[in-house]
Image (cartoon, rainbow, N blue to C red; front, side, top):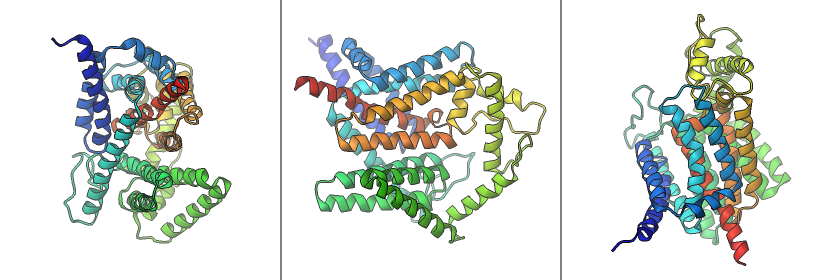
Length: 409
């Protein structure tokens, strides 16, 4: 006869493997992400043992901060506009403590990273094959033009994940036990960096990569690393800008031109990416001034922005392409402050992680997220938001694990 205890143990094991598999699906399929998340949540509930889970969450500062942010988002529902996207914002912060309970064992954290690396390696190979026309381009969205080197999830998300993968490979090279492995990881890191900088057109990923590589050099060489990173950035920027045929040169020249053309309170050109973003930021600031503390409510950005630009030729948008503006508009300065506190807590807790490689990856994940949120509403975007949640669960589950090891000794 099968007991409830055995069912719970089996469900717990399956929930952990489902959490691992999310790393495989992240770069490849948003539909599969959704299936795995639903299955993971169901198995988590079936596994029971809630007293241990709640104790793990209560003792983990990152999990508690995520729950507070989730609570603020839920409160915003009472004066905001509830829709499918709104509920996903609540889910984002609720998943962090759930994942922290599932990644308590170091082996599952290790399996998760290798699964993610395997999926990103496949993405990298396919990206090169598509870029050099060995494989046909893969249409990712009928409403958007196909971009060279883009595989399945769109250029912004792919380049962001590849920028982090470049750092992950560099970190593995640093901590590799043999020269051979060190060389292999280093070569793949360079190959991934080339893909980000020259092959997939996304300025967000390129900026994130520069930030992460600067941090890597600082971690490795300290202030000598800062000097080296500065020289590297100047040299790379000079080489790229001196090559007018490169996509990076074209994009940077376009950015400066569009920024120079933009003027406050005048409608930006519909084909001006930079001008439209500046317009979104400018109007978002006006909404924040009118609703400074609590904002317009969770899910209320689209309606508030539409009212702001009514009777003007400006474009109404549902997304300001900046997470900080989106949070401040919907949840006010209280919500924005709590989001920043969550990032600060993660940064402060990273030093307490048990392994040097985990500490480096935690700092890198936070820097990548903070930087990406400047240019996109990352926590509301499916792939980028799930990446932040998933990596937070993997990395900061190590806080509880480390405490358990210390208590046992």
